[in-house]
Picture 1 (spheres, one colour):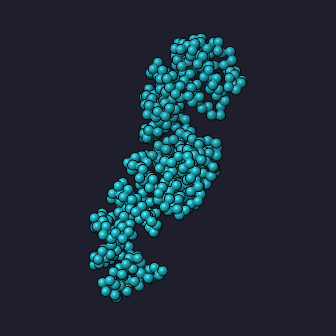
Picture 2 (picture 1 turned 90 degrees about the vertical axis):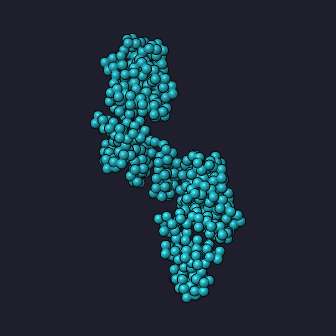
Picture 3 (picture 1 turned 90 degrees about the horizontal axis):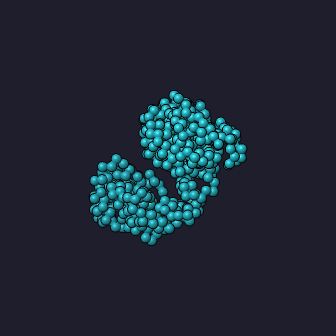
Length: 508
């Protein structure tokens, strides 16, 4: 009973009610013979603790306690057909629908219940539960808040309200509600849930204490394991969160594909542990052919430079469907096995066909960047410099002030022997590089600019930029280039010094 509303706990844990006489249809001993009395006195029974009497409700709770929700549903529907205005019958139908996870069917019954009992906090709590089942989180939060405002303080009501608040990102209020819940009924799940809210608020020390309390109460509580694992990975950068999530799966709870959505970004993007991600996939999703599993598998194989395996998996992925990410992964696998021209073609499919402003626009930028690097790293093939320049143009459309892309475009013109274009562009973007804090980037730019200047006959200016490059990032290549320029100026002694230094740095 929650605030006067008749509530049958849908998760009874290890407790069992009366046994069901026959699977799927038989009545439990608690309801045997009760059907004939179901209507007696129910129509006027108020939804209060003292009024929850009568054969109808007793019969329904017998089915519910036995987890026979099909039987509970049939009984409740028959009861409501006899007494369409009885609120307990309405409550029974609603709860049977939720027990069967038929939330769409439950919604009109829940709406009717709050209509006839607008001041009943328990009715609003159950309405919130139904709305959550329909993924209508905003409406669920509104209903749960209404229940709380009406004085809802039951364990179920507080749990539901806190869950809605967490989902909505209202962590400060969620902590307050969880404080009430924990004072009323400490549990591993409640501690883990409060820890999530605390971690989101930056209260990491308190979150850690709650995680420890959850583990002490029930080390293998699946909800606590899931919440604890997620907090460790997302907020604490603690790889033991993977162990928590795998333990939950070992206990037979949760969904490996859903866990992959948490584990994958942590292992691959934050911790850079592709081998462990691959081990997770091979243990929990062996042979999986769904798009998400294949994508993560390909990403891990690419990071491990296992090109043939990555390519084989990417080709399986493309047989299913070909959105931008799948084509991009295929291109990366082709590049890794040395099929450069095919890879450039695939990259171009992504960056020419997707609007950078679209939801998948980041794939366009990624493809353009990878294509430019690949083409410039192997410019000898026919059309590869043109491919690099096309990719760089698309990259710069999305990020016109990206210094790396600007520098690479100048380098591409240099490789194409378009020194005049390289000089013009270098002079245009020089102020952008001058403001950069990246010494290595500024040094590389000065080297490329100096190289272009002396090649168009502006030798003294080229010498100035090459000297600037050496001041920022001295390299054997910069010393070699300046030595060549000094020799052209017939400054042989200085040229010899630079060339000897270049050989000392890079003897080969």
